[in-house]
Structure formats: C-alpha cells, structure tokens
Amino acid sequence: MLSTLPADGLYFDAVLRPRRSLGRRGFHVLFAIVGTFSIAAGVLFATLGAWPVSGFFGLDVLGLYIAFRASYRAVAQESETIRLSDGELVVRRICRGQAREWSFQPYWLQVETVIDDEQVVALLLRSHGRELVVGRFLSPVERQDLATRLRDALVRQRAAAIA
Image (cartoon, rainbow, N blue to C red; front, side):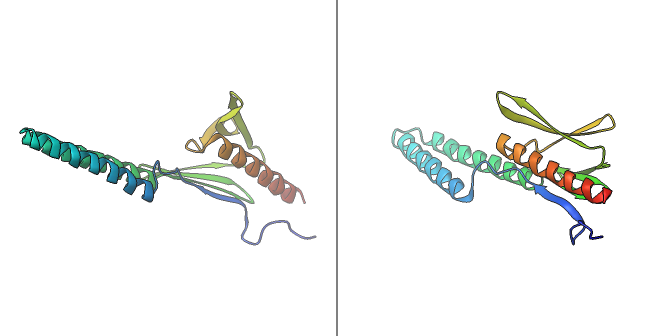
C-alpha cells in the first residue's frame, strides 16, 4: 500500500510573522517629510529670534526614529511556527525573544474560527479542553486562509493515519 505521507514527513509547515507597519521606502519618505518640516520650522523660529526652540524639532525627529527602530526590532523577534507531522501538531511561538511550544494530538484537534461582523477575528486550536489562539497578528482574510489550509492538512493526515 502506498503511503500518503509527504517525503519530508510534514503535512503542514507554516511560519507566521507580523507585517511591519511601514516598509523601508515608506520609512525613508516619512522621515524625509518630517525632517523637511522640522528643518523649515527650526529655521523659521531661528529667524524670529527663538533659536533655542529649533533644537526641540530635532529631538522630535530623533524620538520618532527611536520609536520606529524599537517597533521594527520587536516585530522582527515575533513569529509563530505551525507544524503538522504524522503524530502531532506543534505550535512554537516566539514573542519578545521568549519561545513557548504547544503540542496537540492531531486526531482530536479542532480548528475553529471566531467570526464577528462577517470577519474572522480569531483562529483557535482546540483539543481535550485546551485551546490556543494562533495568528493574532494576521488579517481576517489571512486567518481564514490559514484555517482552511490547516483543516485540509488535518484531513490528509487523518486519512493517511487510517490507511
């Protein structure tokens, strides 16, 4: 009898990462606009004799830059990995540099979506009284797609386990 187990032993393997609020090009455009405004305002205040105020415009730009860098660093350290193999489904979440892992027996696992205003607001994995929310940072469309692909993979895995 032919095995339907994929060659790499995985039925599902996804790495989820949050999107950055602003891409590299948008970041440069934003800072060009903010910098231009700050320089213009600083020059205006300096010509009016209030030159000490000009330095505060530079501090605003510096504060905004530091906030964006901190946000980008936090996003880069966050991810979720969902892997469905022959015997288990493992979710590994890295948040703020800390890794946590959950394991579920795939035969009993239920993939549920919570819908509000015709949008998927949460994706839950449930089994034996435990539940785990996955893909919190995904859009509603991406959550629905993930739920569909994960359900399909569970059907394939369960069919292969029976065969």
